[in-house]
Every structure is written in C-alpha cells, then in structure tokens.
Length: 288
Image 1 (cartoon, rainbow, N blue to C red):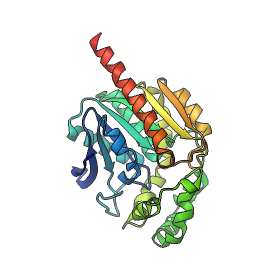
Image 2 (image 1 turned 90 degrees about the vertical axis):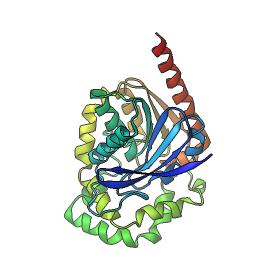
Image 3 (image 1 turned 45 degrees about the horizontal axis):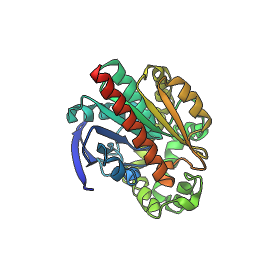
Image 4 (image 1 turned 180 degrees about the vertical axis):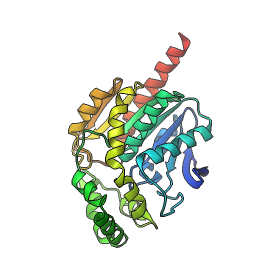
C-alpha cells in the first residue's frame, strides 16, 4: 500500500496530509495533541476500501507551526471546510478522534445547513458537551497564570511523557513501541504551547455551540468508545448517542482513550463494516 505525502495551501498556511487508496473519499481528523501519526494503524486498512486523507491541521504534525496559529475548534473546522472545497468532494465520510471528533461533529452540523457533502461520521471517544473530565485543568490553563505555566512546562516536559501517554490506554502494556517518540514530536514542536492555549481558551464556548448543533446531525454516525477511557467520560457516550438520531454505539471492552492504537484490529473492523453498510444504503437510496 502506497501512502503519499501531500501538501495543500489552507488559510494561507502550508498543510500536510497523507493520501492513500482508492474509492469514496474518507477524511481523518486527529486529536488535539496528535496528528496524522495517530492513524498509522488505520490508514493501510481503510485505504483498501476508500481514498483516505489524514490531515495535519495547521499548528499540528508536519504542517505550519506559527506560534500565532489559532487552533480553536471553530477555526480548525473552517480550515477543514476549505480543504474539502479544494478537493472538490461532493460526498465524503469523516472520522475524528477525541478533539477531532468534536471537529467532525461541528463540521457535519455546518454541512447539514449548507452543502450536505458529508455522508457519514465515525467518532472515536469524541470530546462532547456531556463529558466534564479535565474541566478544572482546562479552566486553569485558560487563565493568564495557567498559560504561563504551560509555556514554561511544555518544552521541558519530556520526563513526564511516558506516564502521561500510558494513561491513554486501558492496559498500558498495550502502548505501541513507537507511541512515545511519535507523540513527543507533536508536544515539543515550536509554538505548541501557544497553539494549544488558543484551543483551550475557546474550549467551553466552542463545546457549548456544539451542544446546540448536535441534534441537526441526521447522517449515520458510529461512536466507538473504550470502556476505560480516562480522557472523555464514557458515561457521556450514551447521552451523545441519544442526541445523534442515526447513531450506533460500539464499546471496546478494556480499552482506553487511544482505542485506535490499543485494539486496532477491532477498531478498524468496526469502521469498515459501518462505512460499507452506509455506502450500500446510499447506493440503494440512489436507485429509488
């Protein structure tokens, strides 16, 4: 399987993305501290069925790293819309991890009001209005003092990385060997603290906006959650499921927040089954 390194000019910045496979387009959106690296176990499998585009949004991964890049939820969604327009897609499926899941939902909600290009969603432990995990930390880091703390600590946080990343797995022994170095690149990149702060300072406002828009998402959606997720409250999964009219909820027993790395075979199988089913249903509807 050939995975191509590609670049696009988005919002006046150079944006990196991976492209692989053939078939209907599938857009992959990373989490807040990740990047296209997060999808390394999924791209080869999904590309057997779809034309996969795994982006590094500005401020993340290999894309532009200006310290003034606004990485807020709403701003990144604007960039994703621009990317979709550049690609010329009339129909596409979208997948998002964690903060990327919130982006995917906001993208789909806006799309429902305008062009209706998004056919289906896959959301892995997505940030949502009904999870309050980490709220105290977000409130602190959003303050002037918290921002100073993050700018001071993040560049020298290397000794803390292993334990912080291990918490993302239900079973830390399942952490892939390349995970530490892969995520460390993202955390330690130039301007990362400033970029993250722009997301944290608009977090609550953006999530509240999302709360009002979620019921407008009436396309098929698959929710995948690890039962031991410590980053986004698993109890919020059922509530989100109830608010998404055409959603399915699948649990992966014993997995944590990084379910896509901890149990990649099961994760990828659920995605392929769901997307193939939604594509078949769309095809049948088109014949009627």
